[in-house]
Length: 194
Image (cartoon, rainbow, N blue to C red):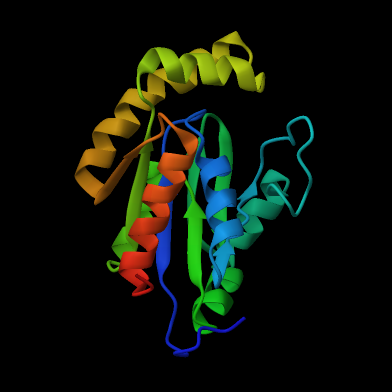
């Protein structure tokens, strides 16, 4: 459904440490708001249990990823924990042209790239209530082995430090519905849907 005012859409970047609940929050925002395009990133990492190509990520080989990058088909890209991730440029441009609000669930590296090329992008960082709770959430996900989980937890503190510098909105995910509501309020405010 096109934006009734037929104006160009906005980009909303949602970032946060692994296990903080970004995906759940973004999916809930997309479910509850109209005119939202929830971006599906490309990645070279293998699919996790239950993940579906084209729904969770577009899973690519490193060769395919580098081909897309070389052709300028990615809006941003980053290497995170040994795997490449990127945002398909064409899908984002199509959604923006149709007046949709585009949600990019990406890491801080990608967020900084988006802010550099799109200064009006709205930056939301999802924080865990505490490091202990983040570790528990990661453990319950069961997606990382001990070494990966340790790496991701170690990276969380540097992500949070960078977020204070680049992100205008900080949302603590202590209560999922409250966090979703706060993100929706930010989006409604910046898109004029209040």
